[in-house]
Length: 243
Image 1: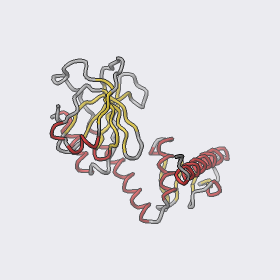
Image 2: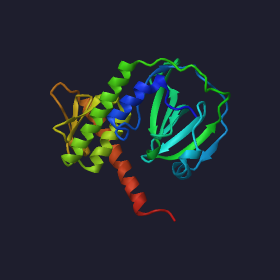
Image 3: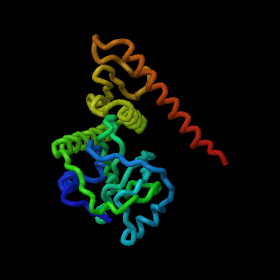
Image 4: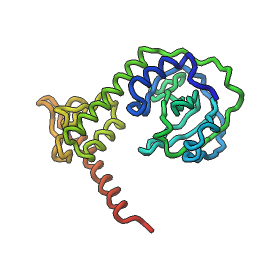
């Protein structure tokens, strides 16, 4: 097992100050050599792991897939694992598309429901030299993630419905998070051009200004319509489970 070492100490401190339950996923572009190889799957019983952590540790170099309690899936290589805080750090191909970069995911095991060990380490990586990290980028992402969580807290406090929060989350997954904001704590603003007002239906999508193109409003309306259709389907499935 490799604990968080000096190279990751600053990230770990920033992460802890922000509150590890507020930051369930922090991504950072880094330069790593890419690895390849066929995966041989094995499974980890998370309940057993969480109840017996003293005798279990992830190994650097393992290829794993984690599914959170919110059904988000993260797949990548174990970079580090801190037993005391139950934080697992994975690296995966960069979402920016840069072939020489990777994303880092900080996962709190308390929020993980399932883990698959896809591949064991090819060699002893305990002495591998870890890359340098741009600390300014870490701080910027930490500040943005914390601000987003605080905005969600304010939205809940102002009576935003569960469906409104789900729609906001889905929009954030489709667009860059910085392009989805809140207005007056209850209205969702998309790309600074389309406003979705409560109760967040297709008819509640309006342009934010006279300069907004009709196509932009139509696109957001289509997105909202698909969201509600999916929501209704899931609701019906829960109401009439297949035996």
